[in-house]
Amino acid sequence: MFSRFLKGALALAATAVAVAACAPSEVEVPDEDAPDVAEALTPGSVAAMITSPQCSTRVVRGLTEQLVAELACIKPGALTSIEGMSGIELDEDAFPYLQTPAAKALANAQRELGSPIKVNSALRTIPQQFLLYRWYKNGRCGISLAAKVGESNHEEGLAVDLDSHGTSVRRAMSRRSYAWLGASDPVHFDYNGSDGVAIQGASVRAFKRLWNRNHPEKPLTVNDTYDAKTESYLRESPAAGFPIGARCD
Ligand SMILES: [Zn+2]
Image (tube, rainbow, N blue to C red; front, side):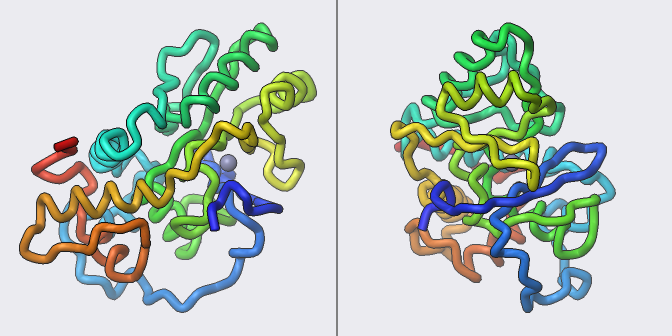
């Protein structure tokens, strides 16, 4: 099931760093994950960032950029950068990508609104969502709810969290196929245009391709499935990015 179809999403990032952790409310169930404190950590790994004093997904920006570049090899043109887009301001923690039709719709909403729109969160890659969920589970970074990997609309590049979300913003967004989630998560808007596509599985595949290029000695089966083995390798992955980056060949 693709997350963009999940209803009743709810999220929160009630912190100074504005990493809203939009999540379906039905995932608010304590799980049986092993405590992170017992983990043997590789310095600089994604897992090491679970206890980073920086409560920002910027800590995995290098890896995130490689994943977006690899995803562009798998689904060319699916994502568009909203950095530098007229009238769109970005929080310093926002990773500036959306699916192309969602980016165009946001630009159109801004033009209609006539004043700048500030985006606090847009696309999230697997390591970003992984960290948000771990911080939530560990009671860190002021995150009161976050989705597991594969369960956030942000991973599809079809959701934005807006700093300002008053009536005029909501009206302009709704005319461009962005549904406001409501008071439970007032910053969150889902793009519901029929031209959005599912990319979360391709994001998992992009990670596996990157991993295998850098770890031919212990390859993952390249498919769209995020399982326990994939997560254990994600934990080992370098937050700053792999030595060998994206390749379209
Ligand atoms: Zn959100």
